[in-house]
Each structure stands twice: as structure tokens, then as C-alpha cells.
Amino acid sequence: MEKVLVTLLLALFGGRIAVRYLLQRLNMNNLKAHGKAIPPAFAGEIDKATLNKMVDYTYDTSRLAAKENLFEDIVDLAMVFLLVPPVVGRLIRLPIHVIPQALIFFAVLAAVGGIADLPFKLYDTFVLEKKYGFSTITWRTWTADLIKSIIISAILMGIMVSAFMAFVSYLPKSWWFWAWMFFTLFEITLLWLYPILIAPLFNKYEPITDELLKEKIGALLDKVGLKAKGIYQVDAGKRSKHTNAYFTGIGKTKRIVLYDTLLASHSLDEIIAVLAHEIGHWKKKHIVKQLTFVIGASLILLYFIYLVVGSPILYSAFRIQHTPVYAGLFLVSLYLGAVKFFLSPAVAAVMRKYEREADDMAFELTGDSGPMIDALKRLAKDNLANLHPHPLYVWFYYSHPPLIERIEYLQAVNNENMEQCQKNL
Image (cartoon, rainbow, N blue to C red):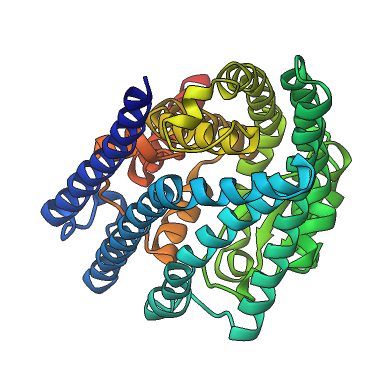
């Protein structure tokens, strides 16, 4: 049975590596075959030089991501077979409770993983993103971000690990249920606190300052019964020139955030269209739906983990003496992480459905898809998006419909609305 478990893990990792490589090659080959052609939807919007830059950026970011993913898999396997057994062996012999043992264990793994990934992050930020004119971050800001991230991650990990191990130690027969209850409350609390406690540690958030924009936003929000105080702008430009907007928070902390780079580069109507799209996520309760799914799935997963981590075979398969649950949690997380990868298409399909619903809501609120189409074109140009993704790559990874597909859909909605208006006349 030990050989089966090891073989299964290697097969899952090997399958993930193979699928990633195949999808990347399909995507790059598709780009090579069609990347020189400007799509009809972008005729007059971009020139050959811009298209070539888009293609080059996609090539470079894809290669870096492929190398980073492969290296992360190698590091994970190296930790399983070379690092975890001796670390657990030493921790077991320490005259300390299992909770500090678990904290040390996960701190060591997090440190190794973080250090291993650091060169890729540095190259991405200070070489690749600067090469294409995106990165504006200074070394001082980057270092401060890193220190803050480490501290926050350590605090959150410490809370989670301590709670889980306390349940395991003092409620051995039902720890999975209490861990699920704690996880649920912790997740909801974190979603509620993130916009007002964590995010402001990295960026400055303030209500929209443009008076004309505020007036238009107010009129838009009146249509759906929302308050304008939930619309913020963030100083993202001090780190990158990428443009974006997103929805975050729950309850009284829910808010829509617009990058200052987006506000600076888009017209008023385009900004309103993007805002209407984000309001669509808000009104359709997409975050609540995602949270509900995560909470339900976590109950099933925690019960499964409870059944598995008590088996001595799981530990002996990887030459781990004794059966410390914290080591079992790490081992099971590797299996589940690989399985989750193969479920990516299902998750991506749901997310694309949400994006279409948000686009429909944007049209419903504004009555015109034109500004949203213009915004998408500008976003594609400003962010050097891939205009020719392979369909399989889209099916597996994309959380948004491809830009061309989105634009064509919005154009069809506009045309259908015009035809309906003409019939009514």
C-alpha cells in the first residue's frame, strides 16, 4: 500500500506537469500561427507594433510561469522525500506540545517554499514587468511589501495551525467538525476584515474624488439601491501600470475598487461601464456563492482528511516515523492540490458564467454595450493581453471569457437591443 500511495502522488504530479506543458505548447503554437493577425474587433485599435508586443509579452510570461510551476513541483517533492522525514523526526523528540511542533513544521516548509520562489518573483517584478513598461515599484516598497506579507501570513498561519492542532489534541473524534466550524468563521471574518484592515497596509484607498464621476456613479447606484460610499480608488500605480477593477468584502465592508491607472487611462463612460460590471458581481452575489461553495466543500474535505490522517500507512509510505497529524495534513494537501488542478476546468467554467452575468448586468444598467466594449479593448491594449488563446487553454484556465468572445457577445447584445427598439417603433 505504501508503494501505491507514493506512486499515486508521483502520478498526480507527473500528470499535472504533463498537462501544463501540453496546454502551454498548444497556447504558444496557436499564438505562433495566428498572433500576427489583428482580430477584426481590434482593427484600428492596435497596430502591428502593439500586437507584436502583446505576443512577446504572452510568450515571456508563459515561459516564466511554466518554469516557476515546474520548480515549485520539484521543491514540493524534494520536501516530501528529503526534508519532511528528518524534520518530523527531530520535532517528535523535542519536549514540547504538538501545537508548537506543528507551528515550527509549517514555518520551516513555508520558509523553504518562499525562498525557492523568491528568484521568480524578483525576475518577474524587476526584469520582465520592467521590460514591458509595467513595473513602477521601488526596491524599498517591494521589501516593505515582502516583510508585511511574511508577518501577515505568519499570523494567519499561526492562528489556523494552532486552532486545528488544538482540536486534534483535545477533540480527537470530532476535530474535523470543529475545525470546519472554525474555518468557516475564520474565512468569513477574513473576508470582512480584508478591505478595512489588511489591504490598507499595502495601498491607500479613498472614495472616488472626481466630482463628475461621483455624480454618474451615484445615478448608477441609485438604480440598484446601493450606496456610493462603497466605491473606492486605490493607488495601484505606485507598483504597476496594469489596470484593473475588482469587488471585495462582505456585509458592511463590501466595496468596488478601481485602480488609479484605470481611472487615468479610461474615458468616463468606460469607467462607468466597468463599474456597472463590478456592480453586476455585487448584485448577483457571486462572492457569497463562492464562499458558500468553499464552506460546503471544506466540510467534506475535512472529514476525508480526518479519515486519512489517522492511517499509519500514509506516514510510513514517506518514511515518517510516528504519525504526527501536522505531517499528515501536509501530505494530504499535496494530493488534494494536485487533484484540484485537474478540477480547474469546472471552476473556470463557473467563473466565466459569473463574468457573463456581470456583463449582462452592465448592459442592463447602462443600456449600451459600446462603452464596455471600448473599455475591454483598452484593457487588452494597456495590459498586453493575449488576443489568440487556444480554446483548450481557455477551457482549462480562463476565469473570464476570451476578450474577442466577450466583445462579440456584447456587440450581439447591442445589435439585438437596437433591432428590438426599431420593432417597437
